[in-house]
Length: 170
Image 1 (cartoon, rainbow, N blue to C red):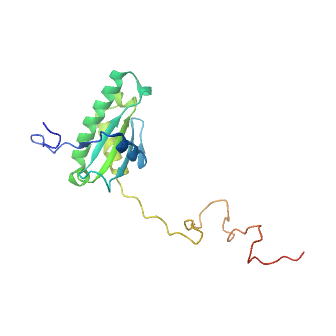
Image 2 (image 1 turned 90 degrees about the vertical axis):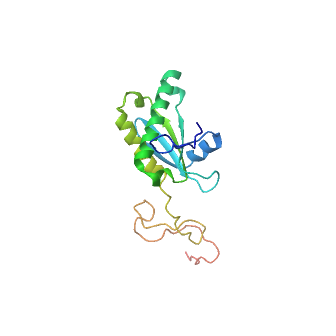
Image 3 (image 1 turned 90 degrees about the horizontal axis):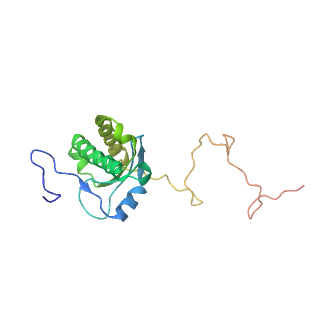
């Protein structure tokens, strides 16, 4: 049965990430961590059209091949259920999400795993906030935050005397 075909009595399956460049692109996006998994994701604005695509991976550090395969299979089913619960708005969003399984995913209750994936999909597919305006020096404008420099005492003054700086008479 082709991947795009609908399952009888249910939603169409979510797409799969199969190419390494897509995994690398998702790794540059937002992240979400739990003890059972790490999710990386990004919204697609270029590349293949379509809705949500998910990739799965488990590092060798997490166990032997049979354990890694069990983790991956649990994540696949949890992702299908979580995307179904999220509704068509989530499934139709053009996004790539990579789920990296951890060993704790084997012993975790399946409902907890589904909840982790559902939360991860919401976090990593959220659009980025607009970038702050750029100030005169090509640097983003700084807010009067709680940092050490300045600490509410006005602008930081440089000790260098450049052109246009007032001359000092000592």
